[in-house]
Length: 121
Image 1 (cartoon, rainbow, N blue to C red):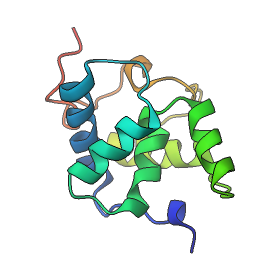
Image 2 (spheres, one colour):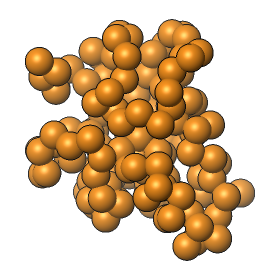
Image 3 (cartoon, rainbow, N blue to C red):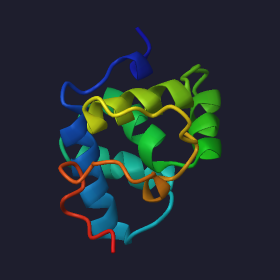
């Protein structure tokens, strides 16, 4: 099974943990570099197979594609991001949302329990 088909059991915790580390280490950014994302996930004690899930949340779409092209993998950025967002929103609908948006540009949906560590103001 390709690595991108694996996912952390608790995606909400994973996304929050990696996001906290990224903001703490690199400040608030629209997108982070793949090496920064990988380090944040691994420093959090997550398996290397899970890093792809962090890439879909915090890397630019072009960086995500380049990572997987270089590895000869065919991971679907839109499908992965939609799955993570559905888990985060606990049933909220993402129909009509531009999935290519950075995590900082998401529409007004209730994700405070995931990003309660981040001041959006």
